[in-house]
Amino acid sequence: MSYNTSRTVRWIRFFIAIAIGMGLGLFYGWVINPIEFTDTAPSSLSIDYKADYVLMVAEAYQADRDLLRARERLAPLGGASPSQIVLQAILSAEPHYVERDLEIMRQLQSDLQAQEQGLESPGL
Image 1 (cartoon, rainbow, N blue to C red):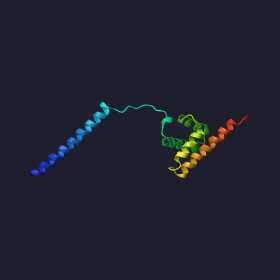
Image 2: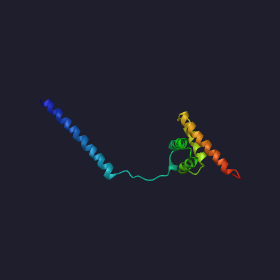
Image 3: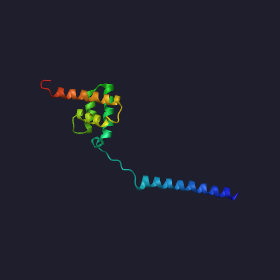
Image 4: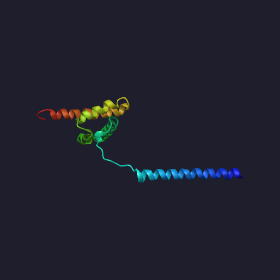
């Protein structure tokens, strides 16, 4: 009988210790050192995340074929032209993305580049 009582007491102490640890952890995380959210520009993303973002823009472009909207969506990524942004994303994504995703991005890059060349031509 003392074996079961001793075992039960150990389990109770174990769960009390877990509860205290969780409580202290939550108190520390919520009161003492809470997360501070800050706004950051999409241009500060690493190249991997920029490639993910460009892929999402390319998928949206594939669905709606709105090149102006795609250009607007790419604008927060930085100072390069939209076609350059997409090209950089393609180059960084090639070893990791499936061919279908790369083809979607290539189509967007091609259409952006054609539009940029058309805008640069005099008389158009």
